[in-house]
Length: 385
Image (cartoon, rainbow, N blue to C red):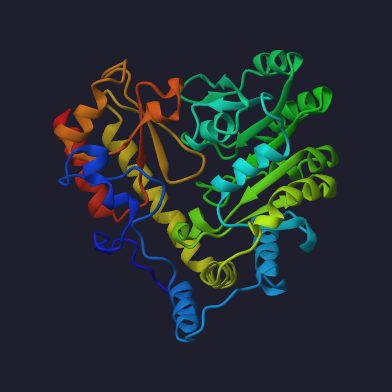
C-alpha cells in the first residue's frame, strides 16, 4: 500500500497544542509551527480503522490491557530491537513524561542528587527539580558537530553522592544514538557507585539510514538490574494524544517499588483508545512505519542540503525527526534568534534555551510534516538569511 505523507491536513480546529499555541508562543498566528514533537502526518489507516470500529460500539467503559495488548509490544520490540521482554516485565503508563516524575520519586529521596545530560528535553529538568531533588547537569561535549559524554565529570558526581541518572536514548534534541561501548562505560560507573538509570527510549523506533537502536537494559545482566526502560508507540505512530506508554522492568524489586508508589493511583491503568491504537499500530503498522522513515530521511536531507552553506549548522541525527540547529554563528547569545525565526522567517521552531543553558544558540526543528510545508518553512529561513 502507498501512503501519502505529503497530504496536508488542517489541524487548526482539532484543539492541538502545536497549532493552538501559535499566538501564545510565537506572538502571531501567521507562522508555520515546527516545534513540538508530533507529526503533521496522517496515522496509518489501519489504526484509524481499528479506532473507528471501536468507536462504533457505543459503550466506552474501563478497559484492560490484556495479553493481546502486551503481545503486540513484545513482538514489536523483538522484531525491531532483538530484545525479549516477558509479559510480567511491562507496566502501563499514560505517558512517559508523567511516568518519569513517579520514577524519580520511586528511586530517589528528597534532596538526592539526580543527573541528566544536557541539553535535553525540558521535562527532564522539571521532573527532577519539582520533585525536590538536587539537579546535577552533565554538559554533553560538542565535537565535530556530534555530542559526547564526559565520563570523568559523571564519575566525579557519583563520588559526590549522585543517586540516579535520567537518560535519553536516542538523545532529544540532537538525535544522537549511544553506542554499546558508551552505554557500557556509563553502566560500569553506575555499578561501581550504586546508581540506577531511567532510560527514556521513546524515539527508539525512529532510527534512520540503517542505524540500530540498542536498548540500554539489553546490553548485559547488570544493565537489566539497573536500568528501567520507558517506551511508547506515540512518537513512532503519531499517537501522542491517545496517552499510551509503558515501562520495562527487568528487575522485579524495582518494579515492585515503583508499583507501590503508583498502583493505588491507578496510574498503571490505560484507556480504551490507547489500547486499541497500540494493538493496531504494532500489529498492522509495519508498512506505514517503513514509509514514514523514508519520508523523514528525505525531509532531513533536504533541510541539510538547503542550509549546508548558511550560518546555520545542522547536527546530523542518527534517529528521530527532530533537527538540532546550531545558530551560534548567526547569533551566539540566543537572545535575537526568536525574533529572527518568529518575526522575520515566520517559522515556529523551538528555542534551544528551553533545553537548558547548553541549548543557547540552538533551535529545534521538527521535520515530520508534509514536504510542501517544510519546503516553505526552509525557503522562508534561507530567504531571510
